[in-house]
View 1 (tube, rainbow, N blue to C red):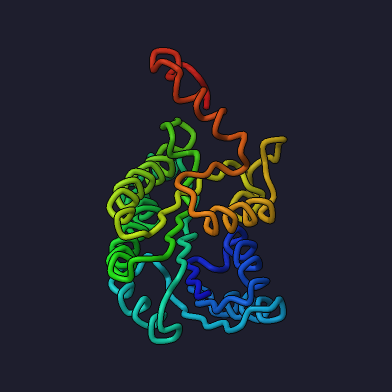
View 2 (view 1 turned 90 degrees about the vertical axis):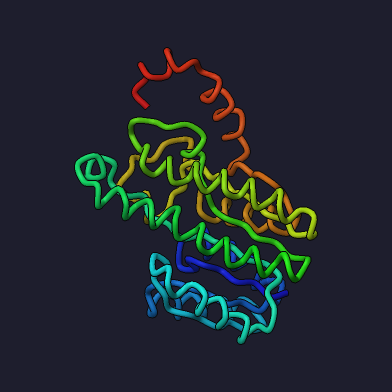
Length: 244
């Protein structure tokens, strides 16, 4: 099995990739920090990965996406599975005051993902098998005052994935939308932890299972599906009064 991981040094991606290493997969890891991605690669080799290659890239650099994808194909010769796991949480208050910051966050979490999906969808459609998975978020299910810039970017990604899934179904390609809730990772280190927080390990295992099973839309942990169903069902006249 040949697996490409974008945003490979994120806590969730690393935990997911550990599962593929147990399967003796060949891995192509992409991240912006050379030292961190090298450390992750070394860890995965010890855990059983057949081969691990790395590519250093800030994925907000859209103009280099094709180069990166071509490098992965040169290295692996083919790609069976792709996980897109990069992103930034951003500062909602700062975004409210700065158009530039809002655009940057949207580029990090949405535009870059759409670019990568456009390139990879064309490849997998021609190959006629494989799996594309993207980490979106429950934040995209409804806009909330506390993080609507982040949520909007994730909503756009989820909608784009629906279209790609519909398109690639006929080619036998699975497109998986992963919607985690709160996850205890370095990205959420500044947030107060509560009972709804899940570990990166459990979410990573869930991502791996969803990719192997070829699921469509997966909430992680599972209880976020009924929670978000309830939140989506609230009338706007009620929802706008809530401090969420």
